[in-house]
Length: 60
Image 1: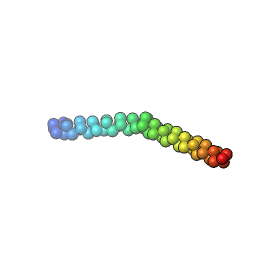
Image 2: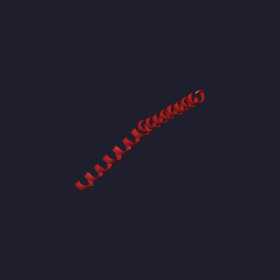
Image 3: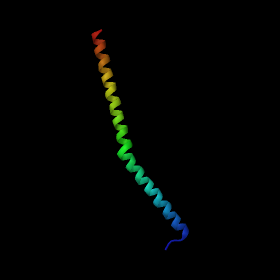
Image 4: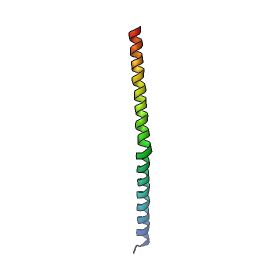
């Protein structure tokens, strides 16, 4: 059915495909939501600090 070279190529293809699949699953379920959540928390913190600085400037 396969020559030995074709068999090795097929195994390499399956290995790369499997690694890519699990990497995409990992990125979509953990890394990207973590990144977006951290960016939102940081932006909210900046907005709070801006409001606090504005209030202090008005009070002075």
